[in-house]
Image 1 (tube, rainbow over the protein chains, first blue to last red):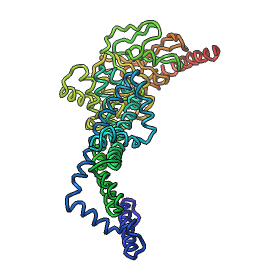
Image 2 (cartoon, one colour):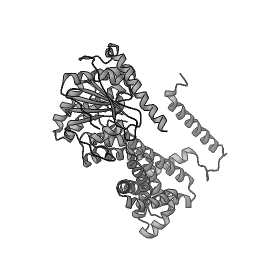
Image 3 (cartoon, chains in turn green, red):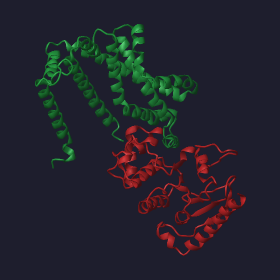
Length: 251
Length: 231
């Protein structure tokens, strides 16, 4: 019963608790340098601080806006380009190599470029989020449409469906399934883009706070921010997972 | 090539693989252009239905929505199409399964949904491309029995492509044998004298079955040997 697989989460939680306790004890026994590894209690206090004086909200707001804006734009443009490229050969010839290159490089290296082009405000972060997401979604949609099940296409045609019926009943649901299947990865990419963008140059945002904590050697704040970003992404993952499960319930 | 399928008749087309049986069906329904020549039928495109080997149901639509699809393509109002679809599901022993997605249906149930999808459009002739090959024996026999009963009840004719000679003889009124491709043609025509209504399983024990089977087998073997010689 103790090793019941259904209770794995309890054991994981307990192990995590033990780790925190050992960490805390080691810190209090002066075995860890608080400059590098602050005690969990100090990290917790830093986290509470961020919220108690309310100064976290504009930063959260900035990061969320950049990430969700980049996500929405990236999905929309990724789908659009993917569909167009899959349907028009000429366009595919032009876009595909660009996307292949963009896919191969770590796209965050574009961050400095976006800063000089778009400034240190919101736009450069949205742009970085966008480019991370759009390339992912493009590849998904582009290869997905080319792999649409021929049998489904033939089925709809023989039942008397026209071109529009094919788009509506075969292509759109297929595209939606691929996009949803990659939604979690896209969410992760969107937040990566926003935070890295803020890290490079910004006046607001969780990434900016991280870079501030780094320059002031504030390890407790750094840990607190990492925990916060983790929590934020996990919540969004949860929502994306629910959405995926509902919309792909046929699968 | 000239092939007649009488009203309410069940006709099978057998032949060596590569003789173009499937291509013929696909050309008749317009999924494929013949390499040369033309396809002429005395039926309108909307009077033809086709049942493939795979069920090819839309995985994101429920059984009922899948059946209603063809009806709405042909201009039926959605609520009416859904009611009609439900009626067809019931007729095919699928009452209560309308809300299930194809993934949550068994192979036999999916085949019945695919059948309902085709039947709902009230075709005069159903083309079948080895639709029962993927089903296991018992489930397959039940679906086949239902198909035969529907044909016998009237109005529908079937042109079945199969490589299963027993299936061809036990179901059909007539069987055509195609020669080895390319440029295959009809080489033999058999009339199956087993009376209707038939039970597809029991018709295999009818006295006329075995001699016909032997003839068909010998003729088909000759066609296959032809290929060996040519090669």
